[in-house]
Image (cartoon, rainbow, N blue to C red):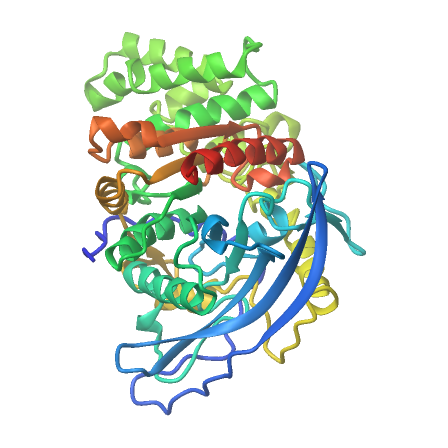
Length: 511
């Protein structure tokens, strides 16, 4: 497979919710081999009702060991698979592989929030109260459409480097893709799923992985029916690279998310009634008059600067004076701090609907991300209870919900900033090649309007700039939801998301 391009650093998507851990240190060069665990699994039987249909299914929690070409064990992947019982012809039953990103995040968020059969109930737009937490049967699960396999990346969850494995075998864009590819190959072989329709669903950096992974697997002879990209990050070249924020394009691509968030919080000078129409106007302004103004840099006249500042005020709700002081360039973290400054509140980065309280209102950027801290403990505690009581899975390992310290420290294709190493990549070409070589491959892009981690307009821009042949553009479809990065935190948005994805499966897996 082609080498994924290393381009520009970005902030880790999920470094917000939980503490990092650094136990179970991986082997270093010249160190003794790490123990190789046995492959074990716990299988339990359950049922769920979706749209009036009772589905009996098996839940399998276990680990699979992947090896190098010489047969040496390198890593042990933890997974939880949900498979419908009583299926006579598995070649007609789709299977979907799901994962979160980070890098350094387990897949607990997708697993317990989106399309699994059980969902943790959290407070929408507010911090979820302390335990006990509530687990509910997920009527929006995808089990009526597909078997589901949730995978934890090496270094997260119960997934570990083992045997002769080393960080370089997993902690980087290319080795991460290859390791997931080997896991999926092994799972498909052991479970006789080579003939089944196949899908990938990635969230956040998981979309980076999914775009590269579908290319990697198809290069190994495993064609896919569809890829679902939720809250995408596909090309660091069009995102903020870090100070001094000298590129114009990121300001343009974040503007519609700012407009959506100002609309949600009723901070616009004139509140539009139709969000969709308003955001289309924001898109046109962003790549039209705004882009032309920024292109001129310091040569923009005072009159034109004033005119653009007033238009930005109309789209963002920020004071004209503040916009002028910022030289027409508003970074996301400044916007999250300033829009609600007069209310002594900040907005979430992952989801601008969530409100935070800073130490004071005079700072430049928020002290923390309230959309991350609001749900982390609920997901962690509920999952641990579910694992022990419903899935009957026992292990002495610590479940690493997030492990940015170890994974971020050793991640390659990156630049060290503030003690962390951040991923650099562009997987647009991987996705273009996968769609070109398999012209039946469908892609669904799911986007939250209030997501400042992976703004929807940037995703549109990325997918429109792959160089995809015109005959294949119909294979990309989009969904937009009044939620944030984790679309499923708004249950109404989750319901709409499930409806859209169900239609996508019907199209992509059609006989």
